[in-house]
Length: 163
Picture 1: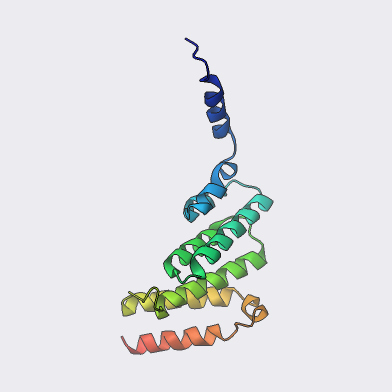
Picture 2 (picture 1 turned 90 degrees about the vertical axis):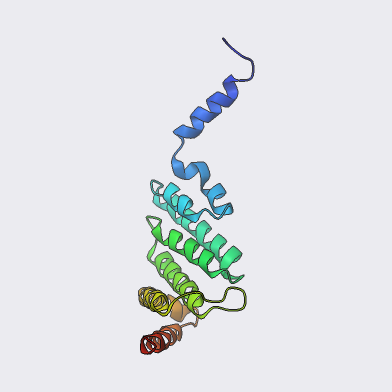
């Protein structure tokens, strides 16, 4: 039995499922802070769409979380942006650097989010940050942050001595 007004919404629902996943909800996922889902939605996107989507994830995590000191959320966003396929080398370096920066801040903390890590968790986090900084290569030099590698190295040494 035909009911007036049912066909159009049903058709739209069917067409929504036919569209590529990345086209369906990256904007909504990012706006909601659902970074992992946004990255997953970009798995089948072409290079240009994937790169644009990764930048969207990064920029939202930076603007909404990193700048306000919400380190754990910034880490989540930067990690998700790094998982998107088809990144340029420059994007990968940038995401590695800012992911490392957020990780370091989860260890050092601040008044907004004091660190709640055990010494072993802090060591693992700093080791990950150090590796990310090394993989960011010349990105940190370009933004005048090259001192982060030795700083993280010193922080790691201090934590290792405290074992």
